Each structure stands twice: as structure tokens, then as C-alpha cells.
Image 1 (cartoon, rainbow, N blue to C red):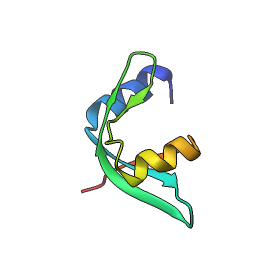
Image 2 (cartoon, helix red, strand yellow):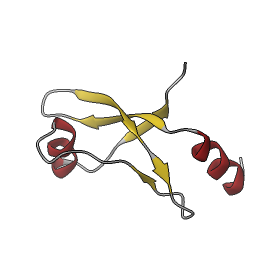
Image 3 (tube, one colour):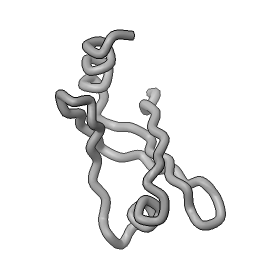
Length: 68
């Protein structure tokens, strides 16, 4: 897959499953996403969410598309 193909694929998707590492186990959530021209995937979260706490402790994530 070329960079352009990856960008086009990501632009077609508005939702993704983002998985983070929690204190006891992995945790996953469906989030709204967007992608920049530099292929950065951006999503928002609240500072009070588990996802936020997980990311502060360990910034590694896994993401996948949401199949319908």
C-alpha cells in the first residue's frame, strides 16, 4: 500500500477502534477520527476518561477500522 492509498483509506473512515493498555488489561473504545496530510490519526477524549489515563501512563495504541 502506498502512502497515498493509506491516506485515502483513512480519509474514508470516520470511526475507529482505539485500544490502550489499562492497569489490569487492554481496553478498547470506538472513537471519531480524522487524519492529517502527515498521516497522523487524531481523536479526542476527555481528561476524565479511562482512555486518557491509559494514554498518560503508556502512549502506545492500536487502532482498527470499524466494520459494519
